[in-house]
Image (tube, rainbow, N blue to C red; front, side, top):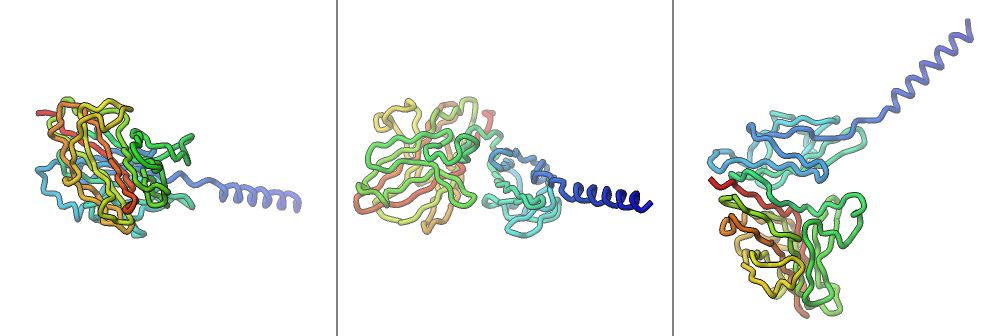
Length: 290
C-alpha cells in the first residue's frame, strides 16, 4: 500500500513538471483593423499597413484599433493596449509589441490617409535566413558607386535595419554613390502614386547630402549619370540630424502614373563635408485609374 501511494505521488509530480515545461505560444498579431479598414500584415517583416480614403474625417492623432493576437499582452511604449478601447496617435509609425512568456515580437503599424488602394513597392531592408549579417544585402535596391571608397550597405542598430552610407571615416572622403531600385516600379494602370520613406542623419555638413530622384529611361545596372533623373528632394521631409529618424511624408509620383519609374537615393560627400545617412521603410502606394 505504501509503495502504491509513493508511486502515485511520483507520477503526479512528473506530470506536473511536464505541464510546467510546456512551451508558450509564439507571439503573433493575427488581425489588425481601424474603423473597418483591415490592415495588411507581413509576418516576415512585422509591418502592418492600413490605407484609408482621403475623403474621410479620421483624426490620425486619436484612432482606436481592433486587433486579435496570440500571447499574453500587447503594449505600445510599455503601455498595455486593449483592442477596441485604447487610442493611439498614428501620425507616425506605431510599434506594437506582442509578448508571450519570455518571447516578444514587434509590429510596425502605419496608417495612410491617401486613398491609395495598393502597395506596389516596398523595401524594409530586413534580412532573413542566409542574408543575415550580409553587408551587401540591399533587398530590391542595388548600389552604384561613381566616386569614393564608401558604398551603400546594409546596417543595423538595435531593432532597426536600414541602408547606410557615410564618408566620415574614409581616407578619400569625397563620394558619389547611388542606391537604386533593382527594377522599375510599375505604375501602369494607376491614376496617382506616392512615395514614402524614413531617413536618419548625423554629422550635418553643408556640402554633403542625400537626394531622392526618379527616372523613366534608366536601364538597370548602367551608369546612372548617363540617364535623365528628376529631383524630388524638396518634396520630402528629412532627418534634422543627431541620429533622429524622420518620415518623408508623401512624395507625389503622380506625374509618372501609367509609366515605369526607377527610384534612387544619391549620396554626395566632399573632402571637407561628410554626412552619415540611413534610409528605411521605402514604400510606393498607388490608386487605380478611375
